[in-house]
Length: 508
Image (cartoon, rainbow, N blue to C red):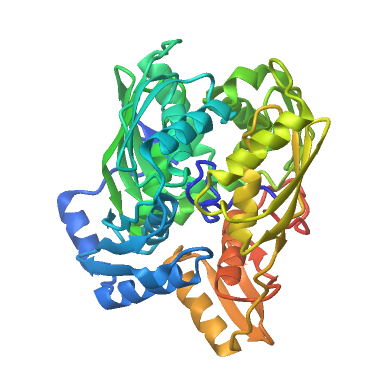
């Protein structure tokens, strides 16, 4: 299983759940609302009681695996969420923030959670951060200077893209003993692109993304600085929007003028795009996505995507396992794609480490994680194909372990045989249904969704309709979060490619 649901990974395992844009100067779609119309729209929006929002966020924190939610306090004031309390790692602090951001009507999250320092010395932490950066297979020999004081990491230097800057911060945040990261890295553009080219590429990427299929965003670019304007449905979607605009050649992204309002989303925009998708448009979208992604683009000309009835097959060879996995995620995020078969080969660039060295690096990488340092892993490597054995406490830990080993240089495949020790805990059917209905209301808030929930002997049965496969999968993920055992997702998907792709496929 790949770690696609980790919220903190740009990957993102976001979540699991988790996004069409418009570009200036032309402003496609319906004209912007006047001030009077905006005021009328605001008056018609449902008002959510702060106490209800607090309860929803607290309950979602309680449901999160490997998160000490009882030590976190949630306060809501005028749709702004403040998180406080104490956690044992920076990763936990960030996960709590991501959960709050996905909640309906939340405009922003002030994360004041305190990360408890460890007994590790600053020198030990600095050495681990530097090693994490060196062996992270998503970073191309970064020129990064690291300083640590009382567990607070400051990074300076240059990277080739905003994506690498983000990845470096994620890598540092995942080291045991780090309580904060000050990311002062700058982007040194090696291949300048024109503002018009950047604007057109970002606009096209958004138009063809399943994550932004009913939003209206304007894209402006000046001196490689991107300005986004419009409306999205959640704080999490806004964060994803910023990340999506961080294509190679971009120096910075501003989204200060992007409003959050789930009640102003336009499902008709989604319907129009799904109605016109073809294998040919999917093919073009794949080429554009691979050519613009900062991680994949060096290998874009070595990837041959084939599309038939919405099913994508990726063929070719790339130099890193992370590139192979990122290419698959990019493909799954394109409108009209029903399934991805990833046949990419990994042929490691440079000197291939021995299996013994890969095992050593993998063990050390897992030991640096604040979530996994106390776990006992057995690692086997044969011809750079790594197998992981041992016990972990949650699906989150299992997926995190795989993601960490994915990034070890030389690894071409990971077989995740880790067993989850924390088995399903019995939960009353009434409570599962109540929790799932709450999650559907606050985390899957698209008004076009019509979902009925029944629970019998811990098994949740979902019936009704949603628009897209992404919503289908999100509903499944939320059912698991709510404590359901082996949920049955019988939801009908309204909008699917009109070229006969099978509905039997269960997306990840």
